[in-house]
Amino acid sequence: MLANTRKNIRELATKQCTFAKEQCTYMKKPKTGRDVEKNEVVSLPTTPPVPSEADAKIAAIAPLFEEIMNILGLDTSDEHLRDSPMRVARTYVSELFAGLNPALAPDLTTFPNHFQFHSMLVEKNIRLHSVSAIQFLPFSGKVHVGYFPSRQIIGLSNIHKIADYCARRPQLQEQLTHQILEALQQALQTPDVIVALDTRHEGVQRRGVSDPTCGTFSMDYGGKFESAAHRQAFLAALD
Image (tube, rainbow, N blue to C red):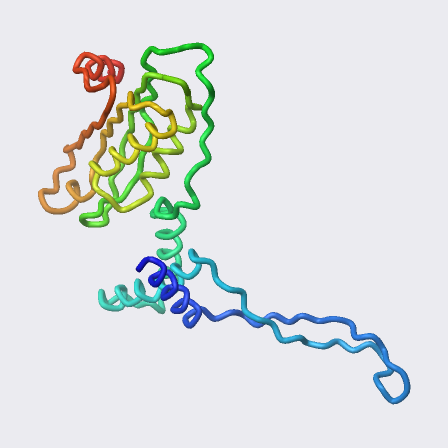
């Protein structure tokens, strides 16, 4: 099913994309007698490049977003709007939802725990931006992570990379919390990880109840953090 979907996207993109004709020239060797007496510049036919999967998705999304703009009554010929469908498509595929592409998963650096450090380590106030799968409106805030090292420790910037990669998908905050937890547990080879998200949702602040003061806090954990005492120590470290 996924393979057929990708194939359809590529085929659709191939039909919709128009490629600028490229002119390749080469200097033809001179011949003798009545043949060409001087070098000729010859234009060679070229084959359009095969679009990547990302390019195919962008090409498929752009006209659909333009249709939405037309339905809303926007003038898509306006100089400020005419390029918006392509800009939005690129933003979706290459930025906001880049976490849907497994090829973009970050390379992580871990180190053997030679120091035998087994106390809790907390990395807090990690900046987070994501998109809710309910209304496709953004939510943003902070991620806080704690873990008890076992055999491996992780470069602190890698925790930021994991959070950022997982956040670049349309999803519920509960899902995102668990995805970050699972990714860290796998990287660290230990279940002793806790993840907390403290965010504000545009879907709550700007529509429906329209409450600009509301925040959302979620937490997921495993291993030693099943202990209430360890969870409390983690939460105390956030103050």
